Structure formats: structure tokens, C-alpha cells
Image (cartoon, rainbow, N blue to C red; front, side):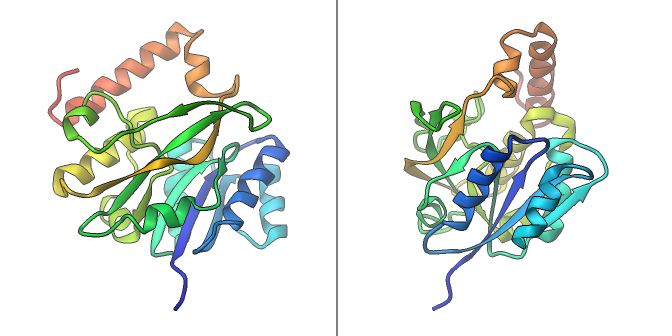
Length: 230
């Protein structure tokens, strides 16, 4: 029986080479699936040559932007399953298969817990997502970007809406939930190592009032589009 094919987009730009190598390696070592690794970046980024040398799919955008690059990369997706993640994080080997096998009985998306790690991949904390609840999800997104979804779900709800800043994925999940209330499955195991770095956006917001104001504006605008008053 053929293995399920999962398309994995790595959004990257000027990434630390070691981090990107670890991210790519973790994709290629996924067990129980056939991974298609897609590097999404812009012209001139060293990741272009690196990805091509490995025989990966490389999608080059004409400008930077997390969701702009991601939307462009969707044209290269060939798998029955899809997820994306950052080029400085690392997947655990069973990540894909653990989430795919939980998508039964009408489930379309599976999300998991993840571990916070330092630059050297030493675990410092754990994020526990908990079982799906739309009411709780409307108060804060707990389905992170790396959740695995069916290709049919991706095709139905793409593109990711860039106008909501960091909340494009939260908006995506809400659109799925509004049409398919039973769509979400939960895997109560860490499946990803999330590097907490000084360059991470949530870290930068702590020291920038401007970034925090924009964050609140984007959040309120996105929720208003779903009829929720922030």
C-alpha cells in the first residue's frame, strides 16, 4: 500500500543555515508518509541554492511576506495532506502520521501540542492545546500553523488572507470551523520543537509598543470579520 503523501511548506528567509538544515532533515525523516518538502523564499536567499541542491521543490516569490510566500508556495503542493512551518523549527519523526491517522470520521485538520526549545533544541516548556472548542477558539487561537489538513480542505479555503497580519491562520481555522464544526482532531502529544529566539515575532512584541498595537488591530479586524467583538 502506498504511503500517504504530505506536502510540507517551509517558509524561510535569511535563516541560520544550521536551523534550516535541521528543519529540512526533520521533514525528510518523517515516518509512515512520503514527504514533499517545499522551500518558500525570495530571490537571492541562500535557501534557493540549498533547496535545489537537495532536489527539493523551491518556490521563489518576488517579495517577502510570511503569507505572501506561503500562498505562492501552494501552487507546488502535490500531496493528499498539507501543513507548513518555520525554517527554524523541527518536526518530531511521527508528527505527520500521528496527525493524519486522527483525521477520521469527518475530521479534516489535526493539531498537536508542541515543545518550546532553546537555540540548541533543549526543551524549556510545553504548549498544551487541549481538545477542540469553538467557544475557546474565539478567545484565542490554539491551533498552530503546523497543523496537518487534508488537501481538500486546503483547496477549499485557500488563500490565507494576508490582510490580517499574524492572524491569517486563525482566520483560516475559523472559516473551516464555520462550515465544518466537526473538522478538528487533537493529538495530545508534542509533535514539533518550537525555537524561542530573539528574532521571533512574539519575542519582539514584548519590547515594541508599535508591534503590540498592530497586533491588537489585526486581531480585532480579523475577529470582526467573523462577527466577534474583541
